[in-house]
Image: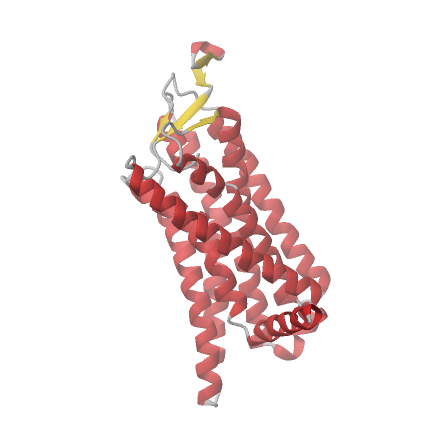
Length: 316
């Protein structure tokens, strides 16, 4: 079960995940629910990628970031949900040490990148609303590529550091994780050595990928709302607030839940609470993002209608 490491401490060769429930009927229901959600996530985000690729009218900064967000969501949900679906069908839910480390690495890369992309998208909307005459000049292709590249690179660097430090922790033979996936806080709790340094790293990385982008998003939306209040047309103000409110709700919940969980690693937050947070980011958010950021957009709806009409005409 375990292998001898340096200094007579041990690392396990596999982990046992306790999951959400041990009841077979409940697991069958969760399998159907999560399976349907996963398919909807792939369909919604895949559709956004296809529309942006096919229609030249979407080759704009806003849709450039939406394209990256959809790609992140597809990869993010695929890093955890397929394994959950398999485990719903198994009595013993095991994952090897290597698979656990790989899953942790990709979930941290994609999670960190998504938070940074949301900040870039908020800045894009801020420029579009608050300085529309200079929008094209400010949000030039080189800046968009740079913002996206920084998001991916920071997410990658943060994940590499955090994964290495977390997976290096010896567990002295303990291998039962009270979680649905390999997650940083659950693995740190399993360690049989002092984890103060790991807790400091978790807080520091949370500042980089959560707190700083969250503050930038808050600042952007504050200016956004002030600009909306200056709109004289009641209909225009209501429309702008409708868009802003849906975006702000998702961003607030996303940053809020993550900050509450990861900025206080020493808190008494229950394992069940952490499971809810992970499921929210792995299952719910990737499915909701296309609806909130894209499919409610009238231009996207029009493009989807054109594609459906074209495909229908080709059949006939």
